[in-house]
Structures are given as structure tokens and as C-alpha cells.
Length: 306
Image 1 (tube, one colour):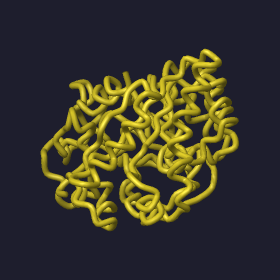
Image 2 (cartoon, rainbow, N blue to C red):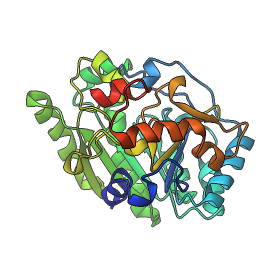
Image 3 (cartoon, one colour):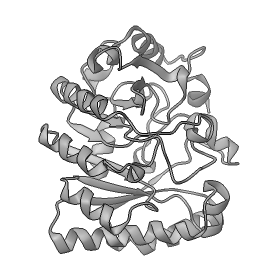
């Protein structure tokens, strides 16, 4: 199940608890910085970026990562990958290189029937819908899009299940949602009750830091990224610095699962190989701070402190 894979990353196994460490088991690579939503809680609302990744850069990086030992490839990061026209080809190329597990997280609203079929037909192993809005009105207010996108996202979950079952694809279908309190929480549970029969697993997420961006939406987040609600981790050391790589659309290697901007850039992969960047001096210094339990003065200070 997807929760097993998530927990294996967020637990930070001992072999990754160091300054110079093996390649991560999982990497997310941003095919596109474009997004159909403009969520006020997302770091994209703080750092405006757009455009698709260079195809040659993508090909080079996923080959280097696979050769270094990366097993799980997320063909997304901050942008919405269903807005990238060559998403199916990206999945095909990764599977041809031998990646055992290729996955996507999507908001669902841009996932048309044609696109859903194409990604599954390309060999996608996991499709997770991030459903974090409990009403069309909340979506319109926070994501700055039309209310009709609320139903589009829910319908995409049901459509994905139908496509998978009709064609016999092996793609897992999952969903996650933020666990709001009070009335908001009850409304969110009603949304989950509707989609639950169509997914292989649904899991809850706490309100987490998102590098301070969720505070701008009026939410009170947990520090750092503690993982799933049922398997929460301490904010320090943060698993994002040790067990998962994050590559931006323009080839920067980021230490932050939320994006984090230029302060979080550990290496420029246009200039160095993935493994060299993964153990760059900046990364080593940041890991040293995390392992000591004191990230004062680092780019992680605000997020980890909550």
C-alpha cells in the first residue's frame, strides 16, 4: 500500500542518517512548474515559476538517478504534471530505464479521461489524488479557481478507477486529505466518504508547515512535514533532507519537499551530476544541523520551529 512506501521514507532508515549518504530511495522531479491552481497555502504562491523541464535534462537526470540506485520516481514536484503535454512519454522513458515504481500526485482537476488512460497505459504504478478542499466555495477561495474544479477533481478519482478496471492496468489509485478540525473536518470526511470506494487506500495528513505558507491561508500548521497523521514524525531531523530528492523544473536540487525557494537549493544539476549534488557541501552542512537537532540560522529554521 502507498502508506507503507510513505512510512519507509519518512522514518529515515539508519543508512541515510549521515552527512554523506547513499542516493535516496525516492526522487520527485518537476516536469512542469505550471499549475492549474493558485493555492495560497502552496510555496508556489510565494515563488512564482512556470514552464516545462527541458526534455534532454529530464532524460539525463533520470538515467543518473537510476544508475545511482533510485528506485521510486515521482514525475511531479510543485507543479501539476497533468498540465505537461509529455507526461506519458516521461513515464514510458522512466519505466524503460527500469524504475520499479513511478508515481504521481495530482489535484485531479486537470486529469481528463484521455490523460488518465495515457498515463496508465504508459506504465504508471501509482496515481494519488490530493483532495484537500471540503467545498466548492473553499476551493474557489483558497485555490483561486472556479468552483467547478471541485467536482472535476472528485469525478477524476472515479474515472481513474473505471479506466483502470476496464483496461486491467496495474496502477494503484490512492487519495490523501488534510484532517481539518470541527465542522471543516466533518465536511472533509464527507468528501472522503464519497471517493473512498474508488481508491485502494486513503490516508489523512495533518496541517503541516509548508515553509510557513499555510499560515498565510489562516491555518495553524504542525512544524515541518511530519508525514501521515497515523505515523507522524518529529520535525527534526526532517526526512526530506535525507531520504527523498526534489528536482525543480530548471534543474535545481532542493532540500525541501515544499519547494522552499532559492535558500533550499543544494546544487545546480545543470552543472553537476545528481549524486554529486546529493552530497554537496551545502547538503552536508544542512544534514549536520538536522542531526544535531538545531537548525537555527539555516533555511529550515522557520518551518521546523512551526
